[in-house]
Image 1 (cartoon, one colour):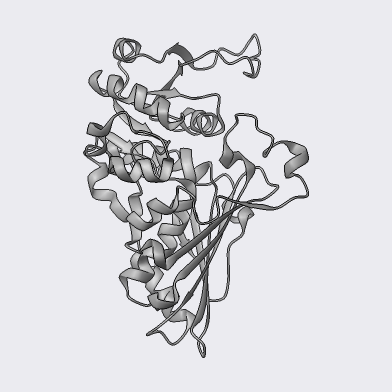
Image 2 (tube, rainbow, N blue to C red):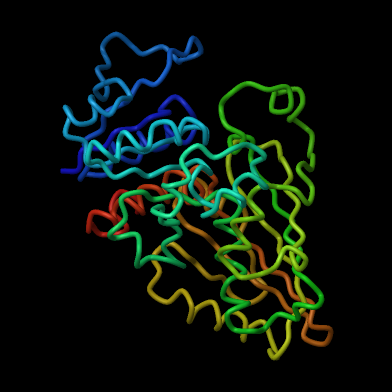
Length: 334
């Protein structure tokens, strides 16, 4: 039985972690209190729930925690990760604190200093379908961002197979449900601003672009990414446009994906010309991919869908935990 702690359990990703781990069958959960939260939802008097302990290295050691999930802002992850690692626990961080490998890269995209540069070299990027090997022995696993998870899984096989006319670039039109912005209240994510609305943000400057570049090898000049907020609770759908080369039909592209993700339990490929939607992946750890090609012009569209709280956050974090501890990768997720 893996003893797991969750910091940030009041947020949407943290709450999703609780739900998954309580039905995992191989994990015992402790909720780790990092700060008081007047907005916490009340707990029924007759509901004991998971144990609550302080979010300290000492408490983690006393509780014998094997792993701590940090569902926290990046600055909090940087503050807490070293202590938990010193206490002997693996750390799976759901923030962007340790994703970008260098201080300069982090500072450029996050526009704030990195306080734990030594850990950047130790962190393993946890996108199993693209980098499963290092996860098994990792002490610090950096969970990918939600947008880059879908984009990287859709784009990497295309570039690896050299079927993209890179001179024409790749355009990623990405839409997310509101939970992707976190639970902290803001005007932009309030009901009256979101409902019956549809808005773009961080145009050409979204911090998740850096992850797609690192994962796929595409250059910033070749990649245009726009994030958009849709009036939905959860889910990400990305429509990716490119010019194909060296392929005769959508079947060729589908076959390429099927070969690349053969045996991957959480990537599902659709028939040529068919595409997923948000309901296809809601409350799952799947990434669904569909592709359409106009052979005469080479115009191609890939649609990738994930649940931003599942494969985009908590589900993928548990997938990484399973790999790190030698459990079946699908445990608690299917």
